Length: 351
Length: 77
Image 1: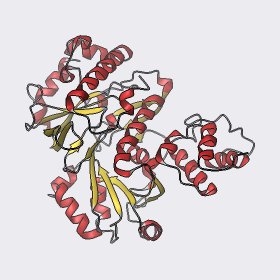
Image 2: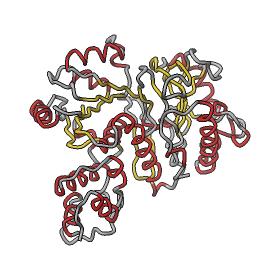
Image 3: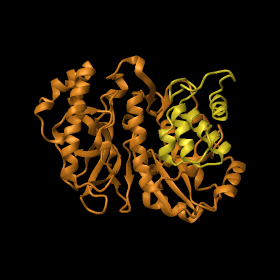
Image 4: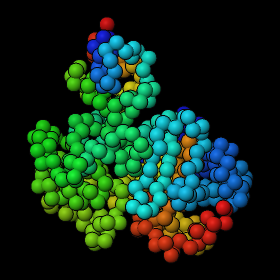
């Protein structure tokens, strides 16, 4: 399972029917692996779903509600093999997800992310400006999703420079030195969407040679009335940035990020997909009908996170259209707790 | 080869007598993701080379580092 041939495929350009065949096969095998290796997960699968070995369609295979990773530490390998535990960035007072990674899973994540990123960046590493402070990747204790995102991206860069100091102020001298050395040729900027908006927009810098890759959600910006189009327009006007690529991803499935394509929509890579579900019936929604986003990924071996029903609202916009084929989708926001009634009923039934 | 050994020791804060030939990624606490990028930067600066992304990800042990450095024309005796 470690040298899964699917993980060696180019990330994009596979039509949905072929892709769903290998995803259904891979997800079925992962479900059986985790159901055996993680008894709590096995109990959930047996209580809530038909037997996976007799389930043909990807959409009918078992999933877990994302909230479970906050209430339970789910693990499918011995504790001693865990090399890192990721935590989600929950707001204060909220429980955080805990995601245990073994070396095999961490390696699959970095390989998958590398294949995805190289479609944008090519094989060469670019000088890299990180819209964060270096404390985000400090060692000791569990790693935040933000820190994991930065660490995951660092191999694609060199001459890493952190834009902010510990008090979240722009390091103007460091920025000026970075741009003096590297600003005249292509370079990479990486950061969380909200932090890019807050700190990069007003940095007073010429970023016209940069490619910006950003993710982490639009919640804060949506409250300010900023969407993807206005985000891009404002950055272009203020900094000259023209290559701006958004991604959707989460701590529960690091390595299988969904990248914004030329069409402005998000695209699953070869070892990942999304399924949109009606919040009440939990049935799969047709193209164009919004619902809850389920994310599937062939990467997780050390925890049962290969199929997760998120609390994000989204819609599949097209299928097998454009060069990247497969599904394209967009995220419409976080679901309000009240709208999750259908799901919590289901989650409650399994415990 | 001794130069490469020294760079490994410097990158991972090991004392000058430490054996490094059997080191592997995540084999010691200091060789984590952050230590890895520190090692890559040290190798690139010292030998004046630029590793591609795939080589950064493949550089999982001391032995592998030697193989990769040879590929970039670094003379390893």
